[in-house]
Each structure stands twice: as C-alpha cells, then as structure tokens.
Image (cartoon, rainbow, N blue to C red; front, side):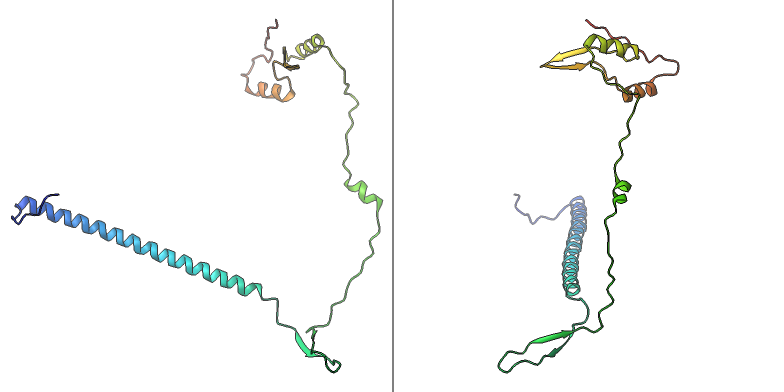
Length: 179
C-alpha cells in the first residue's frame, strides 16, 4: 500500500476525494438501511410464528366449557371420585333399520355394451397387410427380437390426425414400399 503523505491535494484530487466520500457514504447508508429492514423482517417473522403457535395451542384445548363435577357417595376409606354431569340432557337418538336391497346393486352396476357387428379373426401377415391397404392404411411388417411390428400407425386416431393435418383436397392414401 501507499504510505499516506502529508502533502496537500490538488484541486482535482480534492474534488475526486469529495466525490468518492459522497459515493461511499450513500453506499454505506443503503447497506445499513437494508440490514435494518432484514432485521425488522426477521423479528416480525419470529413474532408471527410465535403468536401462531400460541393461538393453535390455545384453540386445541377448547372443546367448550368444562363439565360440572360433583363428588359421589363413596364407601368409607376410598378415594373420592368425580362424576361428570352434562350441562344439557342427551338429545333424542334416531334409529333406522336398513335392509339389504338387491335393486341397489343394479343401480350402480357397471354395464358392458356388446357389439354384434364386430368379428375377431386371426390373419396371416399377407392377409393383414392387404386388408390394411384396402382400408387406406398401408403398412409393412418388421420382425425384431421375436416380435413383429407394423411400420405405420394404423389406428383410427392416427387416421383422424392425418385427415386434420392435410391440406383441403389432398388424398389421405400414402404409398409404402415393401421388400
């Protein structure tokens, strides 16, 4: 570091020194102001947390006024016991007999819709590919690791997406080369 000298500063040096002091004073005031705000915020957070804990503890113990107690007649030589007497008489109790109703099962039973116009057939590879081509969904077959896959998505959803994305007047049929 430079050793301080006792020589007076030039007017430019004095102005620069004054500017540095003003800048540093403003910076330090902002730092101290921020620190005070953080301390106040932390104190407020601790106060709020403490009051919330006290409020929860106070509310959890409240179930209404404590019941009245009286000492019962006890035989001589026993410890006194307390008997609680409720403030209000017991309310009337409603009793309902519930019988099993077979119709309730029918009301919530899941129904299975059967379709009579659907048939299931096992097809060989060539028949499958020709049927798909006839439906406008040409595809090929790839066999890998003991499994066979179609080369195109032939589902109704894929066809619907293709029709939505095509230009008006464009055909939905595509050609697929099989080899």
